Image (cartoon, rainbow, N blue to C red; front, side, top):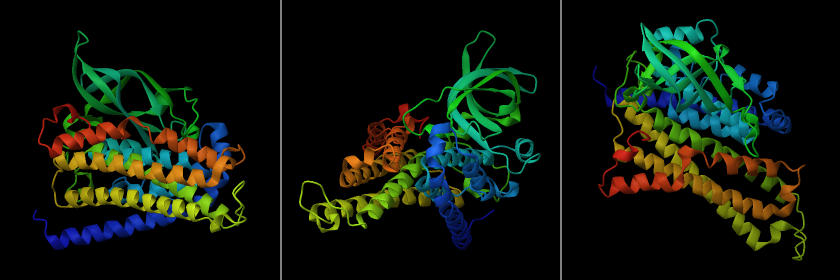
Length: 407
């Protein structure tokens, strides 16, 4: 099938409209999510009103294939939804990010796997742990898998998981890495998530013992890394990418939302005209220093946003044109992720400086968002020095083999 420029432009325009609609739905939930934020942290899971509202609005399926009721998998949709939900409440945005990245991965699986998930319940939620926490042996028709998968964000709100495992032979020697779709009802949720930030994500440990998984419910490393597209349906163009690339953008989207949340609270406080202690300002807005810091913070947030949406545009365009981003382009996504995180971090620190020590009263939501941001921005796949190192190697033409599995 020949893909014309006009076809690509039409599909991208349709994607942009869907993404905008999802973003508006997420934005409408901000007040509700903020109202439940304190209880979410105390409960170490999303409060039911927040989880239900996101589910009812379709915001946990924005990246699922359209034929199962999702939004079609545009990278732009992921950023729109996750950043707005994170602006309301950090953990809600993070769980939505994990659910949508996994829903995107569903686009790489065949219809029998999708039918198992969405057939009984079109609103079923899936999460993922991409690390190979389990081991599996090949048997007739599939694999028998056992393992422990920590950091299972959204564990209390999901029915399915896509988890990494090592395929081993009869002597226990690793042969390859695969990812398996498994029902959480057949697993144990071990309560291990006790943290100072992002407490409400419910990122506990999933434990599975001797679970049978059909071979068609597993993904190879080539499919996972976007080196080979399963291409189950020609019209599902958004899934012509790598899970690592979509995850790269997804992991930074909550940081955008948290930075915007701190911005909202800072501007709200400043507009009350409060005084600056010890400096003779009766109205904080009269301070040139604080006005300058506020402007720098706004520019930092905007710059980080531009980098994320540039990456989303690159992914969506390449997918529509049937192209695969090469290693240099993927490495630039990693670098942009690192740069956007640095910009968001700069904004957050400037805004917290403006608010001062009052920010850290337990009654002040700023301290919770600040802790959430500090935790989320240090996720292992959002490692600034390593992400920049990969890009540096690519632009200097040096060997990038050690990064092949994370690009």
